[in-house]
Length: 443
Image (cartoon, rainbow, N blue to C red):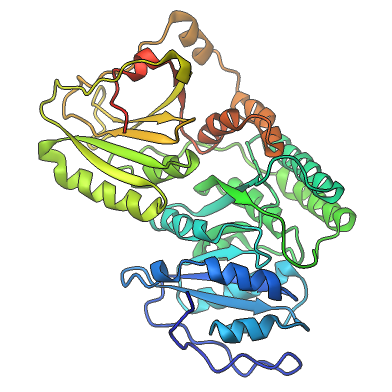
């Protein structure tokens, strides 16, 4: 779908200077930025996959802007055909281009930005969910790449995967926090927070500096899984030179990261947390169970999930009375489930909470809204499980997360899901099908 709204004078000729800076529409709330340097093939595919129909939401209008580092191919012709505004980069390097355009967007009064490499490696359909997380209060959203197609397709692909795993390991170990993809080129950020972090990288180390500085500032950082494909066009990154620069950046900023303090669990409607869980679980369907007098809240959350999980089927299911629990037949062959509980409005001790039941293999969610009384069933932990939780060593969360980073190679996606939930601040409890049967029906 082509961007139909003219925003600027025609794109400049490849050899000439920029005519003028683009003008954003009034009340623009977010900008999708595509850094380019000779990316005509990848840019065409990336633009064809961007959800321009969703970007036209009048309550949250989103614009797309290209910042070009001096392309000599037909990249700017592609931009002209799609009527996408182009900023001519005045500096050199990808990191410098991103910093330059972020400062420009901030000067326009736009609160949110999503960065997406224009080589067609990243899923453009994940841009809207990432921006929705920012709308709900996240400061930084990082896409954790999951290669499409299984094993590495070439020696170069293998080297890049192993190099990224090694760099992510190093960043996690130095910062004592779980960082799954320190080099991801897919992220969304609050422009206010980005400016406060004072990012200075000029090349491909910008992602490492941004993530580590954001963790040090104890910002709300969300890590969500995304697909990753083989790029179109020639790669710009040099494994040895740029890998060394990223490693230096990790050492420089990772050693000073302060130990993370938990985000305050503010009682209320946990819209950002529910959306994060849905994205981490890569949900294809979700059911919200609610009492009849909570219909408005359930409907509001359903609309939020529909907007934030565009590929999922969202349904509402009323519970006729507080004591009625739709049951399912336990199926041992389905293995274990994940349970996450979230604070409910009021925050009183013993008050019922939102419970989220995740079926990892089916990518299904059952969300139980608080019943208004402390009768909502919760799983009973065995004494050994309680001891394991009580005597968990400081830093055990990041240590367990280090092992899960190896799932970037594609070995154990279930382990990745459990650990990425914990890395995002959720206490994901593994339960069996018998306990799951007491917490809600199948969607």
